[in-house]
Structure formats: structure tokens, C-alpha cells
Image (cartoon, rainbow, N blue to C red):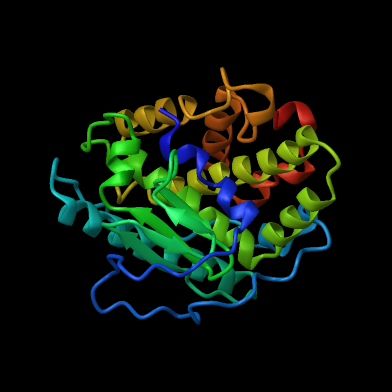
Length: 281
């Protein structure tokens, strides 16, 4: 059940391509950024990013939508509702830290197409963040298929996936994603490049847990829902993959970092870049 979990790699690669022409976007939604612009400048060091000044996210009434089995429209409404909550929470968090924030553009597709980061869907790709145009791409039906039969009643597990991709947008705006791209380009081996990607992916996991922890009482995130979100995360790690393809972290770490964000509830707890290698392998 790796599915969506392997997709954040696109956020690091940023392959250039054509913008999709047939997508499902939020009705009446107007992107707050131009369709195409350059990613943020790299942070001097991802371990000292201003992101860690954000601290806790607000918890002021985000309510999760239920998903109806076999109903793409209900899933699209769920995607929009969850992303609305993410926009609000991170907007408030950045404002608290005195940082500029612009909500990422959202593209929820029902048919395949092209983005500046490549064709979608493609094998293993049902959702991704593209830094070339600061857009989050999610397949309305492909994302559910990629979940490998996860019952739609576990909406928190699906929300965790959305919050993970949104975490890459947060990394982009705070300069961390630019730093990761630069570090990957300077790496001299596949192992070293994958080590950079692991820190980025595990940080996105932690940021998703941070968000879900902030809305646990209103979404709501029940113990049963959270247990399934953790189980789903565990099944998306690198265990069993070839050594040269291990770029997301072990199953235990892929689950562990989302739990850290959920329990500790601050952006400083999600500083994977300052963590020892044994914690992000």
C-alpha cells in the first residue's frame, strides 16, 4: 500500500513539462499565485529554517467531511474541505511567525494530463506537489485506488495524505524544498541523494501529523481513526524495497514521524534536518 506515499519524490525532482489542460478544480476557486513561477530561494540550512518559529497551529473548528464510497464528487468535496482547513491553519501559523504565506494552488484531476513536474497519473503517482508552479495535484479517483482498498470511512487516513503533500508546499515556502533540491544535486551517490529525500519526506509526514493533531477535537480524529492513519503510514515506508529505491524512510520511521508531529504539536519537533541519521533512515 505505498500508493500516494511514494509521490513526494516529485516535489524534490521538479521535472519540467506542460501544464495540464483537463483537470477538476475547486468551483469558483482562484489561485492566489500565478500558474507558473520559480520555487522559493533555498534556505541556507534547512535545520535552521524560520518554519520552526511557527510553533503550534490553531485549532479553531476544522471539520472533516465524510466520503461516500464510489462517489467521486464526495471525495472532491473532501479534498477541498480538508485543503481549506490546511490553508487556514498554515496561513495563521505563518502570520504568527511573521512569515509571508500564500496558499498553494490545488489541481484535483479526474482525467490525466501534464504538469510542469511531469505526466499524471503515472505508475505510483496519484498525488504530488509541484514546486515549479506551487501546485498540489491529487487524483479524485486515482487517490482512492492508490489507497489499496482503504475504507473511505477512515477519512483521517486520507486527510493525512493530503496534509503530507501540503507539507511539501510548506517546505517550499520556507526555503527547505529549495535546500533539498540543491543538496540532492550536489550529492555524489544514490545513497546520499536518497538520504536527503528521506529527510524531506519524513518532515512532510511530521507536518501532516502536526496538522491532524491541531484539529483532533473538531475533525474529529478519534483513536480508531488515528490508529488506521498510523497503520496506513506504516505500510507506505521503504521496507522491502531495493536499496537504491529507499527514499522515504523505513516503515517504522514513516509512521513514527507522523506520530511525533501529532503528539508534540510544534513545527520545531519536525526538524528532521537536525536529527541523527539513525532517526531518518
